[in-house]
Image (cartoon, rainbow, N blue to C red; front, top):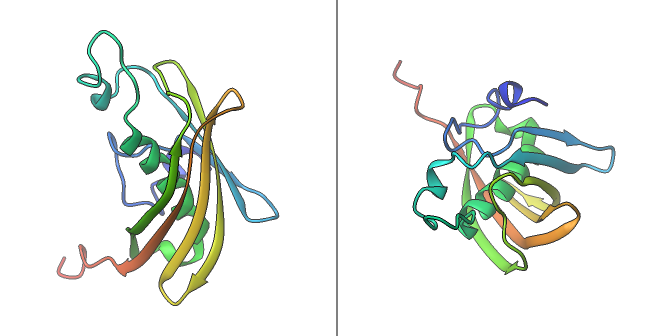
Length: 144
């Protein structure tokens, strides 16, 4: 899926759409990419003259990749964080890096989804963690 195709499912838009492309394989594992250009808003102050992608942004990249594993249930709903657990940061992500995310749906009960994800650059692990989400009805368009 391209970035434009992702917009059919994810509520995020630039500058918070942090997945450029994604494929979901036969084992239902998401493989996503994001290209860090160096012009992103979150690099301006983190840190001047030595920019590093903030950890919270790396978690958001993983979260958006996880959300696409809920594809059949996404339309008409918004995925909201329920929890972020066991997150470990191993290496920094810098301008010019292409981030590769691997995400798995580990369990699903009612509208709650449990996922695990890892994010790497050039095969080097940068962050991994367990993320959970609640799918909530998207009411933004009910009165329009």
